[in-house]
Amino acid sequence: MTGWLAALERSARARAKAGLTRVLRPRPAADGVVDLAGNDYLGLAVHPAVVAAAASALSEYGLGATGSRLVRGSTEAHATLESDLAEWLGAEQALVFSSGYLANLGAVRGLAGSYVVSDAYNHASLIDGCKLSGADVVIAPHADPAAVAALLDAAPGRNAVVVTESVFSVDGDLAPLAALHEVTSARGALLLVDDAHAIGVLGPSGAGAVAAAGLAGKPDVVVTATLSKSLGGAGGFVAGPASFVHHLIDTGRTFIYDTALPPAMAAGASAALRIVRDADDLRARLSSRAALAVSRLGAAGFAVTSPAAAVLSVPAPGPEAAVAWAADCRDRGIAVGCFRPPSTPDGSSRLRLTLNAGVSDVDFARALDVIVECAP
Image 1 (tube, rainbow, N blue to C red):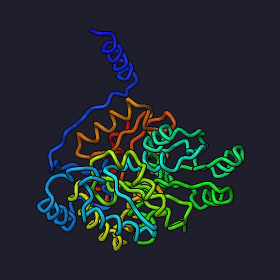
Image 2 (tube, helix red, strand yellow):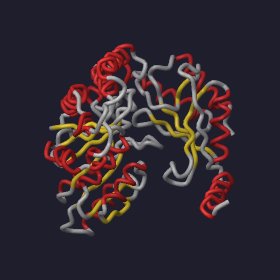
Image 3 (cartoon, rainbow, N blue to C red):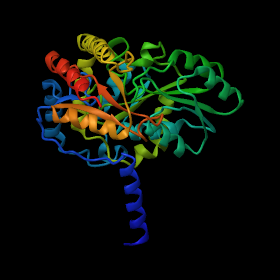
Image 4 (cartoon, rainbow, N blue to C red):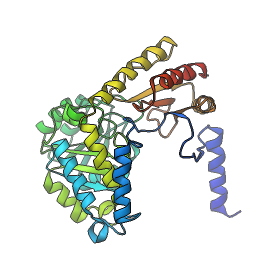
């Protein structure tokens, strides 16, 4: 075995010993599992109107966009989605990318001047965007506006950007967005918010945590999100001042050099967005299920807190215990997320439950029972 292959084998053995091996598990279209692991918060991935819109666009445009957005990949479906997103979020303009990951890379790189303050618990896509930005990056303690203020004050005169999630993707807690904006606006810094886990769930008409905090349309706030959670599809977007969107069109490498989101996906996301705006009943269902989950799991002795949106974290004793717990749940027909380093920001392991309004009340109650019964 050559040297580099041997090094990979040693690395794989080390991951296995630490309980950090990952496994792909292909599933059929209908596997009968109660899904508390995916991100389809409002159950729209299989909504008839969403599927019909995507199917219609698929028959019109074909399988793919056939090129990057600046070549042949921009279609009327993309333009409609971008217009709908901007209007919904109260932003001047929105720009659709082929994934939320690429949207975050492009936004952070496009905004970053010389100094970036990044929350310690940020998603990997934001972290990677910071690395690619070429800026000086400092890590702020989690959800701590006072610490962010001190870091900005320590670098006066710098072209600064503060980067945070709104609802954090592992623990499900909510960033203090209004307080962070007070800090950034007082110091001439920009605030970039990844609103992926709040879009569709929080805010007026489901417009997200940024809107809920009263920051929609602020000229010093940029919002990113994915289409793969409450909208039930795939892709991502950046929304904010028109000048910044034009900057990304001219200079954003993850936009310019990537094949566009398939038009069928854009059309399906537009249909989902129209449903989401009037889905207060589904949002209420998520809220009641969050309360039920906290009550049931808390009564069983788990240290869980009320989730800000639809992400609930349940601590596990360690990575191997988390894997075994999730596997036992899966064997009993319940899919739950299993999060271990490096996905977890603090070195701990946990199950992550993502609430799904499309799951029946009976199945949801049974899922909570199974999680408790399978606990290590």
